[in-house]
Length: 241
Image 1: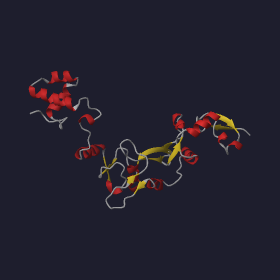
Image 2: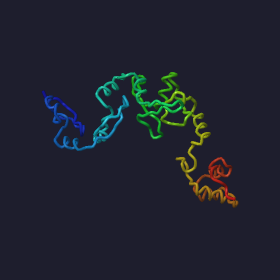
Image 3: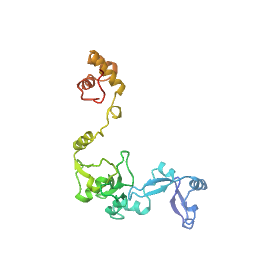
Image 4: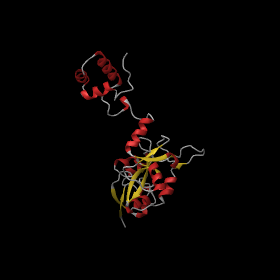
């Protein structure tokens, strides 16, 4: 009896027979797709459900497929059920230290900032959470979304409960500034001026140029020039002697 199947390479639906499943003929819609799949170099992907890394054909990523490593994870995500205890899955991605005082490092997927990411079931839905927050909530219970989990070790992938503490976003910013991790000058994505331009601005201020003329010259607001003059911004740029 013929059944409908999805091509493992292009994602197109086609008709095939169960007897062909033992060979590649039942996995691809055509000889072309079968040949391309054999020559295609697989890439690494992280399962949205269990966070396990698996190989996937690049073509699948273009058609928004290949989110799960297996049918088990796919069906579990659809049903909103765990395939294994979350604590066990979380611990499986943490490299625990051999020396006292060292960090417990997350070895799974990380975001651009270096923080670990793991999928978690919340009210029947699969969401992505940071690994160090998941560890803290596992020990002390769920936290409100307004509460941040901070690192005393300043190591983003660290999941050691001894290095974690809670605070507000304001506490997070204060901690960042006090430890010198706040983006300064050109490294700040919102900066409209370069350090070289700020040096010129401070030189012009010392010469007695008006704030209005300087602001017009560098195409910024008078407030921005005033903040520089008062020393509230660009404090790391020294004034000319």
